[in-house]
Length: 262
Picture (spheres, rainbow, N blue to C red):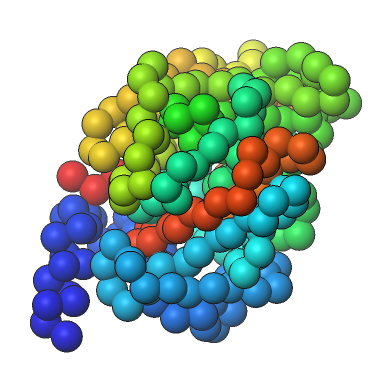
Protein backbone atom coordinates (compact mmCIF):
# COMPACT_ATOMS: atom_id res chain seq x y z
CA UNK A 1 0.00 0.00 0.00
CA UNK A 2 2.73 2.48 0.97
CA UNK A 3 4.71 1.71 -2.20
CA UNK A 4 1.64 2.32 -4.40
CA UNK A 5 0.94 5.67 -2.73
CA UNK A 6 4.60 6.66 -3.05
CA UNK A 7 4.67 5.86 -6.77
CA UNK A 8 1.47 7.86 -7.37
CA UNK A 9 2.88 10.80 -5.44
CA UNK A 10 6.02 10.79 -7.58
CA UNK A 11 3.94 10.79 -10.75
CA UNK A 12 1.74 13.66 -9.60
CA UNK A 13 3.54 17.01 -9.26
CA UNK A 14 2.56 19.22 -6.34
CA UNK A 15 -0.67 21.05 -7.10
CA UNK A 16 -3.09 23.45 -5.55
CA UNK A 17 -5.78 21.06 -4.21
CA UNK A 18 -8.53 23.54 -5.08
CA UNK A 19 -7.40 23.45 -8.73
CA UNK A 20 -8.04 19.70 -9.07
CA UNK A 21 -11.46 18.80 -10.49
CA UNK A 22 -11.13 15.00 -10.59
CA UNK A 23 -8.66 12.15 -11.09
CA UNK A 24 -8.99 8.67 -12.57
CA UNK A 25 -6.47 5.90 -11.91
CA UNK A 26 -8.17 3.23 -14.09
CA UNK A 27 -7.46 0.64 -11.39
CA UNK A 28 -10.90 -0.99 -11.63
CA UNK A 29 -13.92 -0.92 -13.98
CA UNK A 30 -16.37 0.83 -11.62
CA UNK A 31 -16.40 3.97 -13.74
CA UNK A 32 -20.09 4.79 -13.43
CA UNK A 33 -19.73 4.96 -9.66
CA UNK A 34 -17.05 7.61 -10.19
CA UNK A 35 -19.20 9.77 -12.49
CA UNK A 36 -18.34 8.42 -15.94
CA UNK A 37 -21.24 7.76 -18.33
CA UNK A 38 -22.12 7.02 -21.96
CA UNK A 39 -19.97 3.88 -21.93
CA UNK A 40 -20.83 0.31 -22.91
CA UNK A 41 -17.72 -1.53 -21.78
CA UNK A 42 -14.27 -1.19 -20.29
CA UNK A 43 -11.18 -3.37 -20.21
CA UNK A 44 -8.73 -2.89 -17.34
CA UNK A 45 -5.34 -4.57 -17.70
CA UNK A 46 -2.06 -4.69 -15.83
CA UNK A 47 1.27 -3.24 -16.98
CA UNK A 48 0.02 0.11 -15.71
CA UNK A 49 2.06 3.25 -15.30
CA UNK A 50 1.04 3.19 -11.63
CA UNK A 51 -1.43 1.37 -9.42
CA UNK A 52 -3.28 -1.84 -10.21
CA UNK A 53 -4.32 -1.23 -13.79
CA UNK A 54 -4.88 0.97 -16.81
CA UNK A 55 -7.58 1.15 -19.49
CA UNK A 56 -6.95 -0.65 -22.78
CA UNK A 57 -8.45 0.33 -26.13
CA UNK A 58 -8.08 -2.22 -28.94
CA UNK A 59 -8.70 -1.94 -32.66
CA UNK A 60 -9.23 -5.04 -34.76
CA UNK A 61 -8.43 -4.96 -38.47
CA UNK A 62 -10.96 -3.07 -40.58
CA UNK A 63 -12.82 -1.39 -37.71
CA UNK A 64 -12.46 2.24 -36.65
CA UNK A 65 -14.27 1.78 -33.35
CA UNK A 66 -12.50 0.21 -30.41
CA UNK A 67 -13.05 -3.21 -28.89
CA UNK A 68 -12.99 -4.01 -25.17
CA UNK A 69 -13.31 -0.43 -23.97
CA UNK A 70 -15.80 2.06 -25.38
CA UNK A 71 -15.77 5.86 -25.49
CA UNK A 72 -16.92 7.51 -22.26
CA UNK A 73 -17.58 10.93 -20.71
CA UNK A 74 -17.41 12.74 -17.41
CA UNK A 75 -18.91 16.04 -16.35
CA UNK A 76 -17.10 18.42 -13.99
CA UNK A 77 -17.62 21.81 -12.38
CA UNK A 78 -17.85 24.47 -15.13
CA UNK A 79 -14.69 26.52 -15.57
CA UNK A 80 -13.24 28.98 -18.11
CA UNK A 81 -9.84 27.26 -17.97
CA UNK A 82 -9.09 23.57 -17.89
CA UNK A 83 -6.03 21.34 -17.65
CA UNK A 84 -5.77 17.70 -18.74
CA UNK A 85 -3.11 15.13 -17.92
CA UNK A 86 -2.76 11.41 -18.62
CA UNK A 87 -0.14 8.81 -19.45
CA UNK A 88 -0.43 7.25 -22.90
CA UNK A 89 1.20 4.15 -24.37
CA UNK A 90 0.87 2.94 -27.96
CA UNK A 91 1.37 -0.69 -28.92
CA UNK A 92 4.56 -1.87 -30.61
CA UNK A 93 4.49 -1.19 -34.35
CA UNK A 94 1.76 1.42 -33.99
CA UNK A 95 0.56 2.73 -37.35
CA UNK A 96 -0.92 6.10 -38.30
CA UNK A 97 -3.79 6.91 -40.61
CA UNK A 98 -1.57 8.11 -43.48
CA UNK A 99 -3.56 11.37 -43.47
CA UNK A 100 -3.15 14.58 -41.49
CA UNK A 101 -5.98 13.57 -39.18
CA UNK A 102 -7.03 10.76 -36.84
CA UNK A 103 -6.99 9.01 -34.51
CA UNK A 104 -9.16 11.09 -32.22
CA UNK A 105 -8.52 10.53 -28.53
CA UNK A 106 -9.65 13.09 -25.91
CA UNK A 107 -11.85 16.17 -25.93
CA UNK A 108 -13.30 18.90 -23.79
CA UNK A 109 -16.78 20.30 -24.49
CA UNK A 110 -18.64 23.18 -22.92
CA UNK A 111 -21.85 24.24 -21.22
CA UNK A 112 -23.15 25.43 -24.60
CA UNK A 113 -23.79 21.78 -25.49
CA UNK A 114 -25.68 19.04 -23.68
CA UNK A 115 -24.23 16.09 -21.82
CA UNK A 116 -25.07 13.71 -24.69
CA UNK A 117 -24.08 15.88 -27.66
CA UNK A 118 -21.56 14.51 -30.15
CA UNK A 119 -18.11 16.14 -30.12
CA UNK A 120 -17.86 16.26 -33.92
CA UNK A 121 -20.39 19.12 -34.26
CA UNK A 122 -20.52 21.49 -31.31
CA UNK A 123 -20.21 25.11 -30.24
CA UNK A 124 -16.66 24.28 -29.11
CA UNK A 125 -14.75 21.01 -28.92
CA UNK A 126 -11.07 20.72 -28.05
CA UNK A 127 -8.85 17.89 -29.29
CA UNK A 128 -5.79 16.45 -27.56
CA UNK A 129 -4.41 13.56 -29.59
CA UNK A 130 -1.37 12.08 -31.35
CA UNK A 131 -1.50 12.56 -35.13
CA UNK A 132 1.28 11.27 -37.35
CA UNK A 133 3.50 10.99 -34.28
CA UNK A 134 3.06 14.63 -33.27
CA UNK A 135 1.01 15.95 -30.38
CA UNK A 136 -1.98 17.82 -31.76
CA UNK A 137 -4.03 20.36 -29.81
CA UNK A 138 -7.01 21.46 -31.89
CA UNK A 139 -10.34 23.27 -31.80
CA UNK A 140 -13.56 23.20 -33.83
CA UNK A 141 -16.95 24.93 -33.59
CA UNK A 142 -18.94 23.62 -36.57
CA UNK A 143 -22.27 24.23 -34.84
CA UNK A 144 -21.66 27.99 -34.89
CA UNK A 145 -22.00 28.27 -38.67
CA UNK A 146 -25.46 29.83 -38.28
CA UNK A 147 -24.69 31.81 -35.09
CA UNK A 148 -24.88 35.63 -35.39
CA UNK A 149 -21.09 36.03 -35.30
CA UNK A 150 -20.36 32.80 -37.13
CA UNK A 151 -17.41 30.45 -36.79
CA UNK A 152 -14.30 31.15 -34.72
CA UNK A 153 -12.19 28.17 -35.85
CA UNK A 154 -11.95 28.77 -39.56
CA UNK A 155 -14.28 28.24 -42.48
CA UNK A 156 -16.09 25.00 -43.13
CA UNK A 157 -14.29 22.72 -45.57
CA UNK A 158 -16.19 19.61 -46.66
CA UNK A 159 -18.34 19.90 -43.54
CA UNK A 160 -15.47 20.37 -41.06
CA UNK A 161 -13.55 23.27 -39.63
CA UNK A 162 -10.76 23.71 -37.12
CA UNK A 163 -7.59 25.29 -35.85
CA UNK A 164 -4.68 22.89 -35.41
CA UNK A 165 -1.60 23.36 -33.21
CA UNK A 166 0.93 20.55 -33.64
CA UNK A 167 4.28 19.87 -32.00
CA UNK A 168 7.17 20.56 -34.38
CA UNK A 169 8.79 17.22 -33.72
CA UNK A 170 7.55 13.64 -33.97
CA UNK A 171 7.14 12.57 -30.34
CA UNK A 172 5.22 9.30 -30.37
CA UNK A 173 7.68 6.86 -31.94
CA UNK A 174 7.91 3.97 -29.46
CA UNK A 175 5.83 1.70 -27.24
CA UNK A 176 6.66 3.35 -23.90
CA UNK A 177 4.53 5.34 -21.47
CA UNK A 178 4.53 9.09 -22.15
CA UNK A 179 2.97 11.96 -20.22
CA UNK A 180 0.49 14.04 -22.25
CA UNK A 181 -0.74 17.38 -20.91
CA UNK A 182 -2.97 20.09 -22.35
CA UNK A 183 -4.31 23.43 -21.13
CA UNK A 184 -7.12 25.53 -22.57
CA UNK A 185 -8.22 28.98 -21.42
CA UNK A 186 -11.18 30.74 -22.98
CA UNK A 187 -10.54 34.18 -24.43
CA UNK A 188 -12.16 37.19 -22.80
CA UNK A 189 -14.82 39.29 -24.53
CA UNK A 190 -15.32 42.99 -25.20
CA UNK A 191 -19.06 43.00 -24.72
CA UNK A 192 -19.35 46.76 -25.21
CA UNK A 193 -17.80 46.48 -28.68
CA UNK A 194 -19.45 43.06 -29.29
CA UNK A 195 -16.06 41.51 -30.11
CA UNK A 196 -13.89 38.69 -28.76
CA UNK A 197 -10.38 39.41 -27.53
CA UNK A 198 -7.52 37.35 -28.92
CA UNK A 199 -6.18 36.26 -25.54
CA UNK A 200 -7.24 32.63 -25.29
CA UNK A 201 -4.55 30.08 -24.43
CA UNK A 202 -3.80 26.65 -25.90
CA UNK A 203 -0.80 24.70 -24.61
CA UNK A 204 0.48 21.15 -24.81
CA UNK A 205 3.30 19.26 -23.09
CA UNK A 206 5.00 15.95 -23.86
CA UNK A 207 6.88 14.31 -20.99
CA UNK A 208 6.97 17.69 -19.25
CA UNK A 209 8.31 19.64 -22.25
CA UNK A 210 6.18 22.46 -23.64
CA UNK A 211 5.63 21.63 -27.33
CA UNK A 212 2.54 23.74 -28.17
CA UNK A 213 2.20 27.29 -26.90
CA UNK A 214 -0.41 29.73 -28.25
CA UNK A 215 -1.61 32.69 -26.18
CA UNK A 216 -3.51 34.65 -28.84
CA UNK A 217 -6.36 32.27 -29.60
CA UNK A 218 -10.06 33.05 -30.05
CA UNK A 219 -12.05 30.10 -28.74
CA UNK A 220 -15.47 31.79 -28.47
CA UNK A 221 -17.37 34.81 -29.73
CA UNK A 222 -19.76 37.18 -27.97
CA UNK A 223 -22.54 34.81 -28.98
CA UNK A 224 -21.50 32.70 -25.98
CA UNK A 225 -20.55 35.02 -23.09
CA UNK A 226 -21.38 32.36 -20.50
CA UNK A 227 -19.50 29.48 -22.13
CA UNK A 228 -17.45 27.32 -19.76
CA UNK A 229 -15.74 23.93 -20.06
CA UNK A 230 -17.67 21.21 -18.24
CA UNK A 231 -17.16 17.85 -19.93
CA UNK A 232 -14.30 15.48 -20.77
CA UNK A 233 -14.63 12.78 -23.39
CA UNK A 234 -12.31 9.83 -24.06
CA UNK A 235 -13.06 8.75 -27.63
CA UNK A 236 -10.26 6.71 -29.25
CA UNK A 237 -11.39 6.40 -32.87
CA UNK A 238 -10.10 5.99 -36.42
CA UNK A 239 -12.37 7.22 -39.21
CA UNK A 240 -13.66 4.73 -41.80
CA UNK A 241 -10.82 3.22 -43.78
CA UNK A 242 -8.11 5.01 -41.76
CA UNK A 243 -7.03 2.23 -39.39
CA UNK A 244 -3.71 0.89 -40.75
CA UNK A 245 -3.82 -2.44 -38.90
CA UNK A 246 -4.87 -4.05 -35.62
CA UNK A 247 -3.33 -2.25 -32.63
CA UNK A 248 -3.90 -1.04 -29.07
CA UNK A 249 -3.34 1.92 -26.80
CA UNK A 250 -3.45 2.34 -23.04
CA UNK A 251 -4.28 5.33 -20.80
CA UNK A 252 -3.45 5.70 -17.11
CA UNK A 253 -3.36 8.22 -14.25
CA UNK A 254 -5.68 10.86 -15.71
CA UNK A 255 -6.34 14.19 -14.00
CA UNK A 256 -8.44 17.25 -14.85
CA UNK A 257 -8.03 20.59 -13.11
CA UNK A 258 -8.09 24.32 -13.61
CA UNK A 259 -4.32 24.84 -13.69
CA UNK A 260 -1.17 22.87 -14.43
CA UNK A 261 0.61 21.54 -11.33
CA UNK A 262 3.91 23.26 -10.58
